Image 1: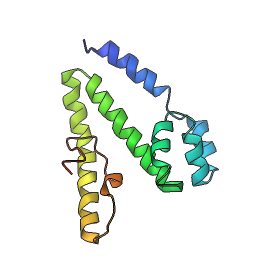
Image 2: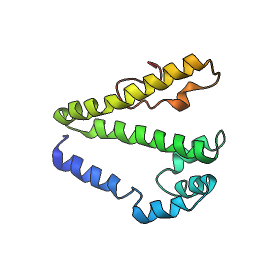
Image 3: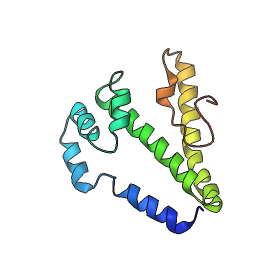
Image 4: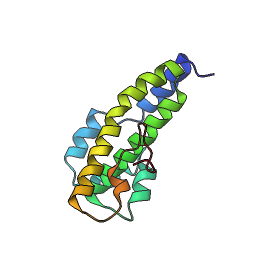
Length: 130
């Protein structure tokens, strides 16, 4: 049964995995590849490992954080009671708009390559929809 206490416990567990102020201060002193290496030692390991063969530096960090956010927000919607799912879905519309804007800019630029890495499919749209 999806209820508020269950969701609160799950969100609290996820919150403990977040970077704290000290982590951010240390990351600010690092170069992009060092940041990627540091993030790859924690909750972002799967994302860094998956993208690390194709990207590096700041781009790797950005894409890994975006993918992790996408997965985390999808999990949040899935574990939420229906009443909260509607509220969260409205909040996630901002990512739909961001993805659509990125897609339009990419098409207008005539750039070639994989658009999937620029999108954040956490709202109503999947990669296939976009």
